[in-house]
Length: 431
Image (cartoon, rainbow, N blue to C red; front, side):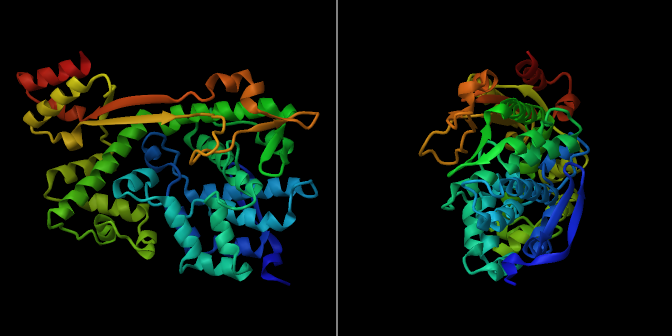
């Protein structure tokens, strides 16, 4: 029997709080789960710094990746014998679902921004490079690793397969919304996934949903909208991310100035230089990053030491509503006042903006857009979701942006009450 078709002697299951059980029968999938590159995802949290806001949010990208695999496995099972579905693509869909987040680094997005990296580039490098994952994929056939990489990169020829992993209603989002809601303890992210899976249908270039399932899809869209603003963009989480990114910026700046660290930051050196190899990238996870943060609390550099202490011991910055577009004069004055007060404004006066587009129609030719959701009418005609749903139409294409200013309130409070600088800072911040 070809490796592609090999089955385990008996089904393996992972007990899962969201999907109850995750089922594995394919030898290829079992072997991929066992690779060091996939096991590393146990050491990367799914929600980065969110655990400092919602203490239950300790779940990992390993959990999530298995969940996305399970949803795609169930969709593929439902699609068996349906027109437009090619059963030969099943294993490819499962492998792409399992491996789609393989390239995430510690504290994902903050880490990427500071070091100007893209986890998708590293996902491709892991799939196609000298790795155990690549070894397993190559055993399927010589093109399989490239096909998996193309699905994740949204360049694979069969757009139906791509839409299972990346569209406006894909397995990735369906898992993370429910999983993140479960672990953060909020109620917003729950929707009737069973119903959605039952009414999904394969078309030539994308998955569509029967019109009778429209209300379940509306629920899914609204749960996404709520999760972004109540969980993913929570201002306390953003405060932790601000401090995290400033720690990494400070450590990099000190390295560039030939500062002598008490503990040489071996695992960060290639990132400071801007040229991490794949093995160096894979060698840095959150447990190692947190070890350095604890060690840097003892550093002679006051800024690095203070920021690490704030992150490790959750002494976060306070925030106020602040729009840099309309309050630039105040921002400039605050910058000078912070300098006068001996607070480096590059590290202690930070504007952070978050924006989200909860649902959008597809704009052909635009990079990074996900396919919209199409409803399949009884007469087999397709209609884009927001044309039939007033709820979705009301938020469709509308971008919401939120600006916050983050400051070390504890330091400001400890300044002399007679200080004119303090008085003016407080006037600008709080009126």
